[in-house]
Amino acid sequence: MKKIAISIGDLNGIGLEIAIKSHNKIKKLVKPIYCINETMLKQGAKLLNTTIPSDFEIYPTAGKFDIKIGKVDSSAGLYSFNSFIDAINLAKKGGVDGICTLPINKESWGKANIKYHGHTEVLRDIFKKEAIMMLGCEKMFVALFTEHIPIKQVPSKIKKDNLVKFFEKFYNSIDGEEIGVLGLNPHSGDGGVLGDEEIKEINPAIEEINQKIGKQVFKGCFVPDTYFVNPLKWTIAMYHDQGLIPLKAKYFEQSINVSLNLPILRTSVDHGTAFDIAYKGVAKTESYIEAIKYHLKGKK
Image (cartoon, rainbow, N blue to C red):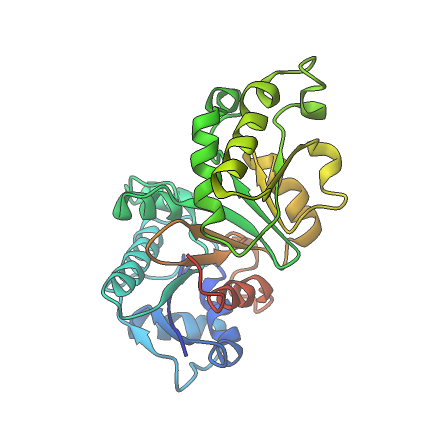
């Protein structure tokens, strides 16, 4: 059975509730090791009015603070960051087979003077590799060619050579033989009338990567507004909202976040800290359970 380090996330949010509530299901799939110390675990469990499972194995992430339910807070931000770093170090040392992260609050990281905006940036910096952000569920996964950048910057990033490199890394990270590639512009440019990135960059990149791997794996480029009526299981979107609006509209509760093209596999829930429902006992666990299940597939 695989060992998975669980980064506990922002303790002012719903992460700890999800971890405790899901433990009996999770332990049948993997051996979870929760990066949280006993003091913070007991404090959170008391606020949840729940008991800690007797086999709830912890790795004692250092730190102590008062949980402030549903609040942006530097202490909670720092603790969630340190929990993530502990999980990474466990994976680097071979103590676990992968990492699953519960949600952090980016504003709390900022208040704690953490220089990163999120998990993926940390992984890229530590491993010096271009991690690929992919979100989805068994019915549909969407990888993002560009991520958290302003829309006005996206066209300048759409270059054939960079696309080919991205396509190859993505193909080597999944078990898929058909991958849909979206165009950038409305109607995929309408033959150049509404933009020429498809003609100059995206279609040539698709042709080149298929020649390189010796088979017609990458399909497209597809018209973005109709593609998601009947999508392939694996899709590459040119920018954040192009891929994630349809994904979350269809599969929000089941979707997960996966970091590919790294020496370790990291998965995460595909939702935030949900401060508005923290410690009310109503947080849903589907995304977390699916994030754990992805580790059973094996690829990174």
